[in-house]
Image (cartoon, rainbow, N blue to C red; front, side, top):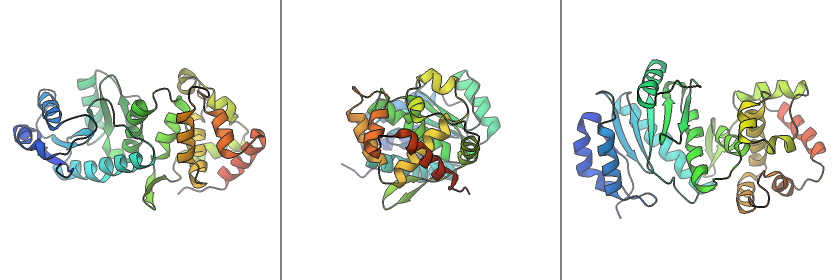
Length: 290
């Protein structure tokens, strides 16, 4: 098998990519021919010249910034994040070849999201659309959201019944990320200030309440803390060396503990979660960003 590497071409040179795509190593169950056929179909979808296509298994990256910038995102963000996320959590690649659309600025992002996916983005940063098989990004806002959204298709294929609180908690953990001792780690980020204010005002729900939220409740009935509370619970577990253990145990026991709350207690070694939450809140108030 040849070594896995990205191949970069302008949209106008897609034919050339089809001729050399065999140099890309296989990812998951997809063959070189699968990637070639996928890129061939993309040729009719790309809305204009000036786009660069990068085969970066298990994704195909399409961007309208300079070829050098698209290449940097594919190598420095996508390949880096995928490798480390798989090292820590995921054994299975997404079930289909997914596209990562990297639009160079707000105007391009909004215009092309409407043209390609018939939608107005609800976030200025980016999103994952399972229905479209696409991660859609305003890359001018940085690579953090891209790493966040990369988590979601891996969760979808590895942990399909994962509740929204942990799906978003893990994804948002890596909005600000780095590598430590060969593992991906989340760093404190902009969500901290709002969470600290909610802690001071006594407005953070219990962890039992958070874990028991349905998908609709998590997104539509958010008291303003769901993302941040989930993120900084994952951050706390990470900093105590427990996050990967929690993921494995939760995944293993999801049939009997679909919310993950009982597993959380077990991994933490806590029986009094009210007392734990007070300690966690004190911990959160002691964190700093930047």
